[in-house]
Structures are given as structure tokens and as C-alpha cells.
Length: 112
Image 1 (cartoon, rainbow, N blue to C red):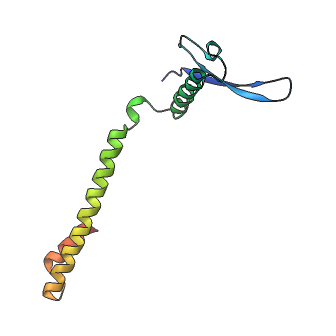
Image 2 (spheres, rainbow, N blue to C red):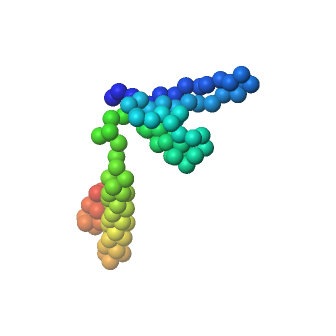
């Protein structure tokens, strides 16, 4: 993937320095905005986020969306609840018979 952001450290005569961000192909650069204006801060924030994404080296299709992450979290919760239910079912079966049965053994085998 071709990068569209870049940065460089700009050193000043007084010894201080700052990071200058660039977004190539963008109609305006940071010089277009008045320094410390809301638009300038928003521009810098957007370019920083894009640069951080580009720094990962991943293609867009390799990044999971927030919806996909939520679906994965829901599946993990469901899986955990089913595991707990199976464990309780195995305990109930063993309590009813006073010993481990083929069914409770099969459930425990499935849990591991």
C-alpha cells in the first residue's frame, strides 16, 4: 500500500523541535490553516490517525471493523455461557446418580 502521510522533525534555532505532518494528495496542508484553530487541530488529528494506521503496514481488508469486533465478543460470551451450562449439567447428572456417568463423562470430554 502506498503511503499518503509522512512526518519529519523540524528543529528550531532555539533548540526546540516539533513533528511536522504531511498528507500527500490533500488539497490543503497544515500551512493552509491558522495555527491552533479548531480546523488545524482536526486536520492534525486526522493525519495522525491515518499515519498510525499506515504505520501498522496492514491493508484495509486486514483491519477488523468495530461491528466485527462486537460480533466476536458476543460469540465469546455465548461460548463461555454454554461452557458453564454444560459444566452445571454434568454436575447435576453426577449428583443424580451419585457418580460419573457416560453422559457426564462425554460432557466433560467436550468441555476440554
